[in-house]
Image (cartoon, rainbow, N blue to C red):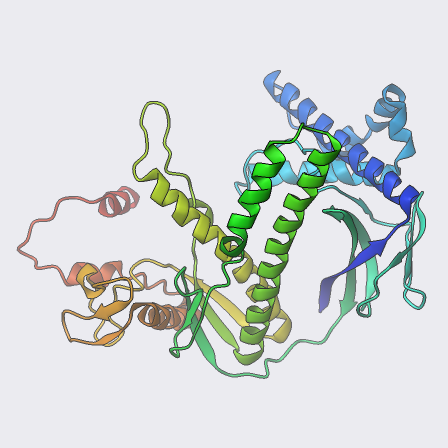
Length: 411
């Protein structure tokens, strides 16, 4: 089987190369935004979506109109148009929001699909129109290099090399399975009773970040002192992101090596962290509290945790199963009774039917693992809705809820 893997290294360009890279990234951003404006105008006029080939045929005209585009490699500009097409396809298939314009200073990057050379022995990379650039050779590159992406993070530049190589079918060394319940008080609680405390990378640096953001707001915009303050703010954001990535990589590597199957909740993080501010006509409730909760949710990195777990388990021969999260902490793992009263507090679980007691997060992880087994065996979701209805007395007349009305609409 073929394995795609990326190897990222810090570059050490000279002053002229840094200037050229900033210019290439700006040209790539300009082409992306111009293609986005054309697509919007074309849609408003009732036209069909313009594909990559038709859009790329306009590049020579743009270079005549904007002479400075000729200084940038044509490959990186063409790749920018491919990125634009991919963004629209993700939007059409409801995997992402409508594409937004690229902003200067955010995600500056450009890509070369060919024409580059890698000299690992001398720790240098040759790029079109840039020449040889030294890099910090922290590990060997495995496989055949397919493309290289140059990106900026703060004041540093990085090269991400995507490779392809043939590997044998992986066989998991471990045979155990585990369920994981993610949260805020506990980052991850396992079905075997163990748990991992959260890192809270943003929360630890929040006050320091506010301090330097206030200093930056008091400077004259685009002045030399303003740029110095901006770099300090950027460095704090970079430290937050790096600490979170390091934490998640360590946790996911440990789980993927020690378990052949991992069951997690299929959480919709975007919906869970949506703002409660409302609009001008209907204002939201408990906006400050929800804002703090959203901040805590996003600080955990649940989506990245699941993404890393998935590809690492695939590489080790394991499997990741996502199950519905409904009622996982309200279902008794001993007798199957489902009731809101089972979870008396945030941490305490006590079944009102059989009296089973445990930590609520451990109960959730146990139920997630059980649903993972059912999903792996026969594709059963096991969300607990059917069992919850059985616990209700038949003589009690219930008002239609949002869940029952939605289910009735699909019958």
